Structure formats: C-alpha cells, structure tokens
Length: 348
Image (cartoon, rainbow, N blue to C red; front, top):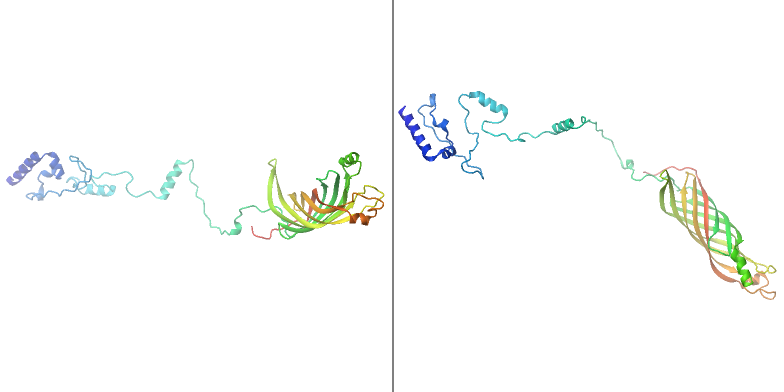
C-alpha cells in the first residue's frame, strides 16, 4: 500500500508542475492516474506512446482519438454496440462516409421527388440496316425510262413588226431522271403589228419582212434543278428547271412588197437554246413553260426589184440580203407521261 501511495504522489506532483495541457498531450488523464483494482494491483503502468500530431493542429487543442479503452463497467456490451454501429468510441462520424449509394437507390429517390414513379420500359433489340435510314424523302415524280408527250402553244416576244404564233409538240424519252432526248415540231401563223403600217406610211414603202411556216428540231434536255414550294401553307408543289439545246430546220417565206413579183422560201439551219420549268400535278401530268431562242440566218427580198432586175424568184433569192435572226418564243403546255405510273427500283 505504501508503494502505491508513493507512485500516486509522484504523478500528482508531475502533473501540477507540468500543467494540464502537458498531461493531455502525454495521453494521461485522471482515470488513468488511479490505480487499477483486482489483478492489476502492484503492477507498474506504462505510459502510452505519443501519436504524431496532424499538420495544422495548434498546441493546446484536445486531440480526439479512438485509443481509449472502454470503461470497465461497459464490458463486452460496449464493444458489441461499437461493432454494430460501425463507429468506435471516440470517433466522429462524418456525413457521406461509408458505402456510396447505388444506381437503384438514386433512381428510387428521384421517383419519390417526381410527380409520378419512374416507369420501366422493356428494351428490345432490333436489327437495323442502312436501308432503314431515310435522310431525305423520295422524289414524288420519276422520269427515267418514261416518255413525255408535250403539246404546247408559243408566241414571238422580240419582233415588233410581225408576230408569230405557233402550235407544236415535243416527244421526249428520258434516259435517266435528268437527261432526255426528243424531237419537236411547230406550225406557225403570223400577223402584222401596228409598226408595220406606221413604217409604210412614213417611209412610203413597205418594210422587208419574212414569215415562218414550220420548224423542226432534235433536242436534248438536262435537269439540274429540282425543288418544291408551298401554296398558302397548304399545298406543296414540286417543280424542276431544265435546259434545252437542239438543232433543226426552219422554213421562212418572203412577204413581197409588190405583189406582182413572186416571193420565195428559205430552208434555214436552226440551232436552239432555252430554259423551262416543269410543275408536277399528278404521276402522269405536268405543266410546262419556258423560253426558247431559235437562231438562224434568214434571207430577205432584195431592196431593188424591177421588171428587168430580180423579177423572178430565183434571181431574187440569188441576190437576197442575209441577216442573223433571234426568234425568241415563249412556250406553255401540258405534258402527258407514259407509263402513267412508276415504281422505285433503287434503295432508299
């Protein structure tokens, strides 16, 4: 008993001399300074080793640790409670530590916050191919390997002396959807315009003019532009623009200034160029309109015709005056397509 009191007295003196903060840093407290009961009597207590302080810890702060042993009265119950809760005595439980929530838990939490539960849908595998991917809708009208019968009417737009009207037609076959070859023919009717009489009265002589009787040509058509537009935001109309180039022949006839002298006719090589538009109404019907320029070198009646000079048609034609003519005409008509329907034979 004396030895125990001597140790207690020595520890009390050291605590009083060093101070309470030092006793805490050494890991001793008042409970540990007391002698233990029972079997530990007479045994010398060894001081605990000092654990290194974390960086940034100030002196005098109380360090919380999990090194303290449970109190004797807690026994095995205290240890079991600590193991069951997952937190030992002396440790601070931080929020968010431990196992991370699973995807199922997050989904369940979100469904409770939403207006209704999250509906699970069954995902089925489907085999897809490039044929099932449609980026641009199909053209509503195909022309490849189809025949176009195009009757039309036309009129001259650039002659102020004599105006020509024509009734004609085209027969075109489309090798591809954008390229076609065809033939055309026209029959002309002419009328004199007001300047014809005005020039005659002012100059005291009739103007030199020719009229056209008929024309024909071999044509090639190319379609570079295709589109569509809406009418009053209700109806969609598909259209296309195409160019035409061809070569053919035109018959012109001299209009005699003096009816006692015979006139003559000319067969003229006639290239032509033009641009047109086509509007699709049905699978077998379209409306066409365009402008064509028929170019040729025409032969006109000689200025001087007398009984002794250029009296016959042959002499007059031999001494005729040539001039380059652009016969620009506006055409409009309706096309009928055969076969009247078509089928897609290529992949989408």
